[in-house]
Image (cartoon, rainbow, N blue to C red; front, side):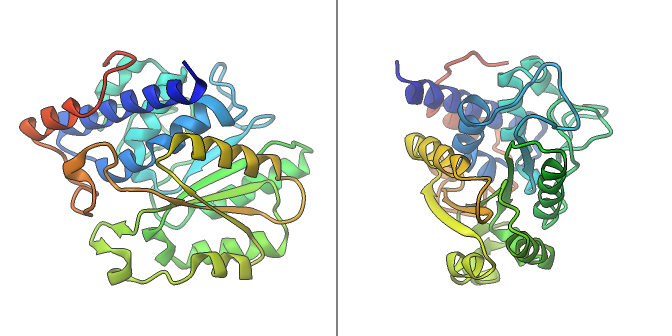
Length: 281
């Protein structure tokens, strides 16, 4: 079995985890989580240099990921658990009272893998920029990744961080936009059109790359190529084209599953489309 095939098998299991987690509490965000599953899987299992055990809160001497669109925590939690940050069985506590797996990642619960509380949209790129600057001051050559949703680009703070990153050539920073064209209230083109994102980020001094975020081989090759180019020149921005609800046919092509949990029948239908490959929790 090739490495890409193994990653695809892992991604299928992560998508099963997402469906089961959100269904169990009838709360959460399956759409974007399913769309970003391939990215999370590629980062944690193939691309990032990171150390689950022991978990180092400072992130020094390892790559760091900031998930600005923290509402897609089901994918984030599943991949971290499957990668060894905490027991896979803990996924069953998602969004429950006193759980370490809150709806948006938080730090007070001290969940290994989570360094910054996220989900207040628009803030992640600023945080990632600060971490990237800290690495430079500490002569740490590792990379800082920041995942953002396209809907959160309506927040002005994103553009302040983008302007700063380009102006100061924060070249160990990789921004990734989940470009699925949908947000909670509808298509981004109807809510607040984003225009030419490539041209905008390039004008701010970033190097822009595009990829299909639901094609594993392309995700892996693009991430590796971008990571290898860090440390010189400009910060990098990846426009990642994804399908919200990827892997579950009735969740794809619509914004309606942004924050809606499947009922019992929908859960079983979704799981029937996703292979169990590593064992359900």
